[in-house]
Image 1 (cartoon, one colour):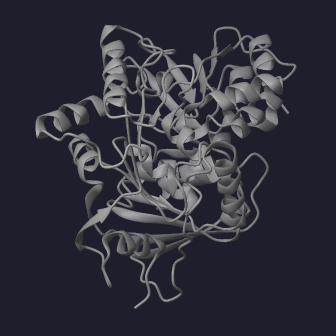
Image 2: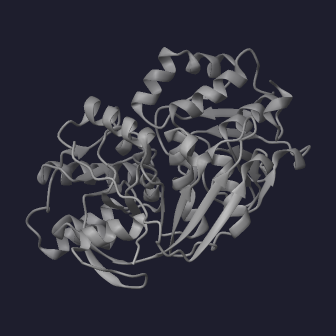
Length: 426
């Protein structure tokens, strides 16, 4: 019997000869992480257990990225709790302000999550790392606490849906548009507790940043994980990250789906028919071509997050905005995902472009994505964001609205002050 890439990774980490969808397994993890919202709960449960040590101080990351630099006393106390726990148990991968970045961009950048790994995180967008060909998924804080102690977690083996993308991408269409279109097609529960395996000639041609964006939003379709088989693009990215930041974690394993693997369904898309997408309130599945959304004025544009805060995202936005001004009455907030992205944006002049256009260039942070800070919406305001969720009240007031789009659409919209196709300004 053939296995999918997801099944192969789970089988190997469970130490079983065979598994099938629906099986409950205990599996060893390669890496786990928590942030300033979820890790405090895990630490509390860890302390209640009476545990005296963590399973491996080199395979845990604590990253206070949601509310830092601290916006209030509570967020300051949460960050301090992570710092103290890291000191007590000699956690190697604690990243505070000045070193931290948005966790799901930072860990791949540092070479801490690798192909073939099994990774869990107390954050739903942990599924991002599937772009590297690993099994990664979000868990609850109590499961994270147990992983701190045992280095293991339980799983129900998911079925896999295979998504095949063929054809030639139109100009201004990338990974964010593909995943928004896909979620628009299958719905927010269309892959409920299933693996989303992204494949086809289009995926093989995508750069890593676009692959991260696609796997990041698998959870928005209800998926257990998103995953892409590693290829030369993956291996080149991983080797560069390891060489630059983490030579100790040099060993990884490539898994690929068998030709006779069993899938719950196979979905195929002709990408030549896909336009730049915008998801309208209040679900990511409300995806529409941008040219069908006219005269929708916006108060704010946010470019950043674990979905689209990498250097290629900022590059696209900067090229569109260069020489233009942000529309009067519209706020542009640009948040690089990591310190490395921040520095590169400075070196390449992107930060200067955003600031001269009338925008704000922020320190790395999750920012307003979850209604945190650095851009909360008032009643009645609309925001176009490169983030991943647009639920009611997600970015502030319950009567505000969030629209989801790519950095290209976001940049063009900032210039016009309304939802805009990039071709209108370039």
